Length: 366
Image 1 (cartoon, rainbow, N blue to C red):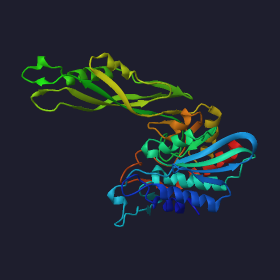
Image 2: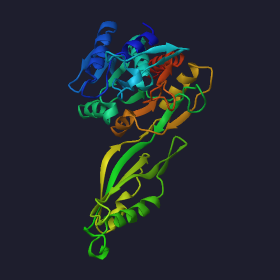
Image 3: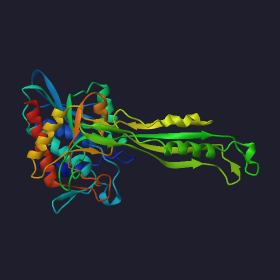
Image 4: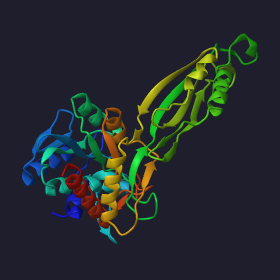
């Protein structure tokens, strides 16, 4: 089976989280395929994760090819009248929900895992996680239960960063910390504002603090990584003639390894508190030799010259890196493709990624 055919099969399986769908069928398909086409040890855990292992002799290191089989809910145009996902192929590209993020690269990793020999020592692992689009719940559960490869190639998008059509190697990515600033006051009639405490005023004082914060920065293998902090929503007040007693401000922070903006400073304002709602960790590869080896494999698989790059958004590589795995990100998706009604992926780039994954599996564990 070639990568286009396997991608089509994977994409055709609905696997978003919603009242009319779950991702279990996609995980079952991946596990069954691996059992039929490889001699690896294949398991599917209680969280929906699929793990396959090829073991060599004692000692040695472990390398994982990592992806996920869940997707975000499809656009209406990506579903037929019967509720099945639509997959089209035109001009060398496959289109449909999940083609870019990330069932195409998942198919490439499955085939690379199938074709790679078992290492002489150590272990080659394939992992397809559930719930990546829900905050990495599958990856986090696997880590909690002992999933701890030494190295990982995560198949999220890295194509088109240094130049159009070039599949690069991401050695770092940003994380995301979403938080809420809550300002509390005391209600009063608006005709007597001094009788209350205006929560919106307290919230805007907090916004001024957020606006003046420096963005977090760091360096990863010679590459500068700069985060950001931005107020994205504000909600307060109950009526035009009532001094507001509560106001909430949403803050989006793009984090970098080992750095966070000091958002807790807003709590110096009377009546203001701050809570973290989501914290997706950033990723930084700490092993330059591994990053270079993957870059060599990427260079051998294409005529263009790939580069080490950084990604602007979080992936499961962040959870793995936080648990001690040295990660890089290599995948077929291009910037702006994921989660769109026009989502698509190049078949030629999927073939390229399959070659990169197999080459890394063979050379790094050889």
